[in-house]
Image (tube, rainbow, N blue to C red; front, top):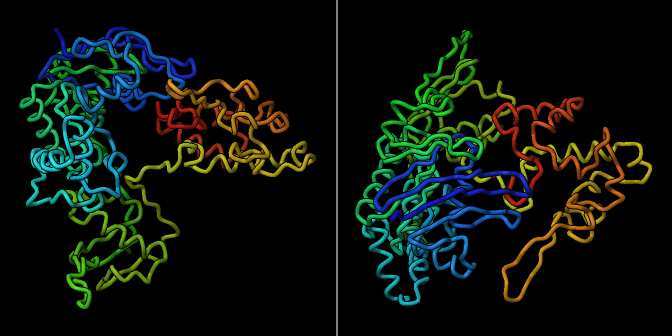
Length: 499
């Protein structure tokens, strides 16, 4: 009997289909890779197996794990399964780990979910489990906090949490994202070793076929919520039959073409002997703290039209070098941690932007439109309409967080939370606003026939067309659409836009 058997798994959110009749199996000791482009449904498949889904989700089909149909279990029974018979390695370690708790305490906490394990035993086992994933206590003490570790080390801690109670099924969601190739290879080798030693099944979620080429036993290719092809890894890589799979393979092997840049006689930016340091821990209160050297005598020049790549392992100083240079380019010439023997060209740079690995959302009420600031412009546009001005409505009136404009029943959520004593909390449709989030007076204001509630239901592609006459909105929304995010509902909350 298979360890995992998924039959006709179907998922909907607010009535919209997300997953469509998925069928696959997993044997003990087997590695199955779920691959496909962003938005194909890979992560939602993993969350469906764990049943960590939004309240508006509708799940049907059959998920049989070790002989038990997970769809028939209650929430307390599912909690016993999560972390016990099945574990999850989440994509962003800094979001999955507790920043104010040591790594040893976090692993011990996972062990104490088993009522048979006391605090002392959990603490002793935590060190052994961390050592098993390559974080030996003599090199990386369990007393360290997540922010004191490198990206690869943090990912190993997340893996330690997932395998702490020796699950039979492990799900890894993009576990090597943002890691350098050396650390990536180490993490993949670690997962393969754990599968072999514990004879557990592994579902590896990735968009990169090269990552699983030497690792997975089978590959299932997902596209728009469906599995379009699944077979042994060698067959997928050498004799795929579906056009979408062939397209993925071609994209994985492409070589970028660098356009020739017209070099000016003088470089746009030139620095020599860059050094950057950070204060280390003070050994004694009366001793000046030593400094850790992050960048040592680096020199480079950048011509107009050039694209320069900084490549190296985690911790080699890539981010420190660029942040030190960008601080000067942004006008922070008073930086005390970056020194140069010479520098030129900073005054010619009008603005610089950093795209980093930090999570983009800080609250559950954030959405793609708030990330790129277009919601502010839309509210201002509605406030400038003649009817809005006649009623004295300001731009803040059109915020679903504002008491004046939001629906008084659902408080701008579009749904109402019901707390029940002996049943899980649930969300129901708001009858007052019909999930429009605003009160009647606010919904009376229309731009090109649409009110704010109707605008919030648009996806990015639809919003770009609707606001095509507003250059500021058209430019931003079209850029999001051109990057492949046109299908996202730009204004949907609670992370559902990323489904």
